[in-house]
Structure formats: C-alpha cells, structure tokens
Image 1 (cartoon, rainbow, N blue to C red):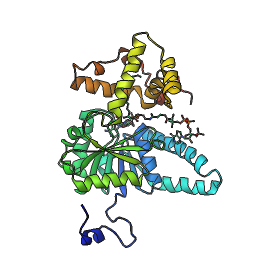
Image 2 (image 1 turned 180 degrees about the horizontal axis):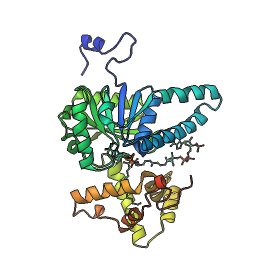
Image 3 (image 1 turned 180 degrees about the vertical axis):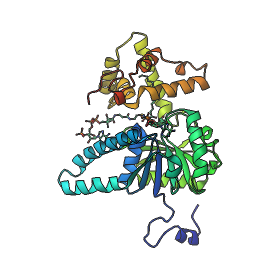
Image 4 (image 1 turned 90 degrees about the vertical axis):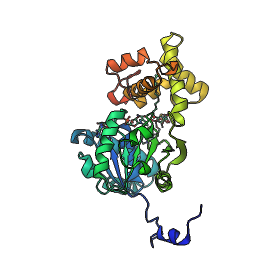
Length: 310
Ligand SMILES: CCCCCCCCCCCCC[C@H](O)CC(=O)SCCNC(=O)CCNC(=O)[C@H](O)C(C)(C)COP(=O)(O)OP(=O)(O)OC[C@H]1O[C@@H](n2cnc3c(N)ncnc32)[C@H](O)[C@@H]1OP(=O)(O)O
Ligand SMILES: NC(=O)c1ccc[n+]([C@@H]2O[C@H](COP(=O)([O-])OP(=O)(O)OC[C@H]3O[C@@H](n4cnc5c(N)ncnc54)[C@H](O)[C@@H]3O)[C@@H](O)[C@H]2O)c1
C-alpha cells in the first residue's frame, strides 16, 4: 500500500534519513547473544545501551565484544590499521553499559531482550520495562523457542511487540527472523524489518509458531543426533564429522550445541516438553541433562561435549 505523499514527506527528515528510524536501542542481557546484538547494532551506527545484572558481567560482555571486534578489524581493515582503530573507537563510543533496566529504556526506540530462556523471567522483565519505557518504544524478544505472544501478554503494548531472532555468532550470521503476533501493528513490523536491514541482516518474515523457521527444522535434527549417541549408534565426534563432511555443515550438531550453550538447549527442550508432553521429539535427553548437571555448559564455560579450543 503506497503512502499518501504528505505521509511520505513527513517520514523523511531533510537529511534524507528516515525520520522515525530506530536509533536508540537497549539490549537487555549481555550474554552470548545480547553482546553480539549490541556489537552489531553499535557497529551499524545505532546508539546502544547494554544491560546486565552487575558490572562484572557487563565488563566481561564488553571484553567479549572487543575480542570479536578485533577479529572484524583484522579482516576488514587489514590494509589500513588506522581506519581500523577509528572504527573500533567509533563502535565502542556507541555502546553504553547499564545495570538498571528501567533507566536504560528511558530514551529507547527499541528494546531487545536476550536474557535467559525462561518465560516467567522474560514476562517479569517486560512487565517492569512496560512501566518505565516511553509509549512509543517497541519491545522485541530474541527468544529461540518461546511464543512471542506469551511474552507480550505481560505488557500493555502488544501492538508494539515483536520477535527479533538473531543467530549465533551475531557478527557472522546474516539471518534475522522477524516475528509478528496478531496484534503487532504494521508500523511496528515495518520498523523491525527496517532495523534488521539497517543492521546488515537478511530478514525473513515469521509467524509466531514453535521455533519460527530455523529452529523448527534445527531442533529435530539436533535431537535425533543426541538420541543416536544415546542409542550407542555413533559417537559425538563421528556424528559431527559426518555432518560436516557429508552434509557440508560448518559445525556438527554437538559442536553447535557447545557453541549455543547446553543450558540454553536444555531450556528449549524442557520448555517444549512441558508444552507438548506427548511429543517424543521433545522427550528430555538423559545425555544432555547429565552434561548440564555436571556444569558442562559448552564453550562459554570451557567444556561441553568437547573441551573448548580457545
Ligand atoms: C546435540 C545435542 C542435543 C542438543 C539439543 C538441541 C535442542 C536445541 C537446539 C536449538 C538451538 C537454537 C539456538 C538459536 O535459537 C538459533 C541459533 O543461533 S542456531 C546456531 C546458528 N549458527 C551456526 O550454525 C554456526 C555454524 N558455524 C559457523 O558458521 C562457523 O563455524 C563460524 C561460527 C562462523 C566460525 O567460522 P569458521 O570458519 O568455522 O572458523 P573460525 O572460528 O576460524 O572463524 C573464521 C573467521 O570468521 C570470523 N569470525 C568467526 N567468529 C567470529 C566472531 N564471533 N566475531 C567476529 N568474527 C568472527 C573471523 O574473522 C575468523 O577469522 P579469525 O579471527 O579466526 O582469524
Ligand atoms: N545461544 C544461542 O545460540 C542463541 C541464539 C539465538 C537466540 N538465543 C536466545 O537468546 C536468549 C539469550 O541466550 P544466550 O545464549 O545469550 O544466554 P546467556 O546465558 O549467554 O546470556 C543471558 C544473559 O542474560 C543475563 N540476564 C538474565 N536475567 C537477566 C535479567 N533479569 N536482567 C538482565 N540480564 C539478565 C545473564 O546475566 C546473562 O548474561 C535466550 O532467549 C536464547 O534462547 C540464543
């Protein structure tokens, strides 16, 4: 539907930039995903506030961002180290750290939640943010598996709520799944799509169905991998080798689980098992549960199915 001319003109400032474009972004959760989202948003000219529970965690998140940025600079500015330094300081200049979520959203155009994969904790967070953020602020969750509508119900802004599902590692994975619920307004959805593109992502439009698109296909594949090992039919190493050399995947399922985090994987499966108790696919995995119980959560703690290289 084409915009009336006067609306078209109103939406553009004299500089030609879209006047209502998302500029100020708050990321709640500075873990694997939140730090990556903050890094890419700051690298693409957005003003970013990254929030986590304490300054120790935030300092570790920032250190991870700097490590990742060094890898980007080494590749992108190999011929011009000075430009690389300028890029690095510009990106870090776009990034602020905050432990108080309510303060962090005062000027936010968009809030992206990337905290633990737990519905009640996400709902509690958004309920509090709903009271602190301006009415115009859009809320989005980076959840892997929880229905966006079940998170949005904790707020009074379902029309300004959507899903932005990024992929790990965010600086390298081009895809962004943009999810709308029935109440998401066209304006909100358009802004989320435009923001994804402004971050350099290729967006796909998703309905609020279990696993959206990628995880709907990825979870069955990865769960069958772990059942194969539980049945004694193959080792994790051979399954990974087979999928890399036989199917051309950059990582096998067990390497990927270490990369994603065994805790997050367990949260996903436990959530779907609770919702669909009779579905055999989501029956808990004794092997995955054993590793999580032993604290072997993957690369982020140095060991999962494998001991981490780096
Ligand atoms: C099996 C047990 C059962 C488990 C149950 C499962 C149930 C739940 C499962 C669902 C989980 C869903 C999670 C989520 O919702 C959805 C996802 O995110 S799924 C994950 C998607 N991502 C992938 O599949 C990643 C696949 N891997 C890759 O693409 C590549 O391996 C890589 C990560 C890009 C790394 O590249 P490689 O070439 O392999 O290796 P290098 O590490 O040497 O990197 C090369 C080069 O790339 C640049 N680079 C790499 N990483 C970064 C980074 N983080 N930041 C910046 N730059 C990076 C860099 O230039 C590297 O060169 P170097 O610096 O090493 O010189
Ligand atoms: N790990 C992946 O590959 C991946 C990919 C896509 C989406 N996701 C989703 O992203 C979300 C985060 O996953 P992750 O892997 O980054 O987890 P993570 O454990 O690495 O990070 C979660 C962060 O949230 C913080 N946190 C928890 N509760 C908080 C609160 N109330 N306020 C502020 N910060 C809080 C934690 O301190 C931690 O730093 C989950 O919903 C997950 O399903 C994960």
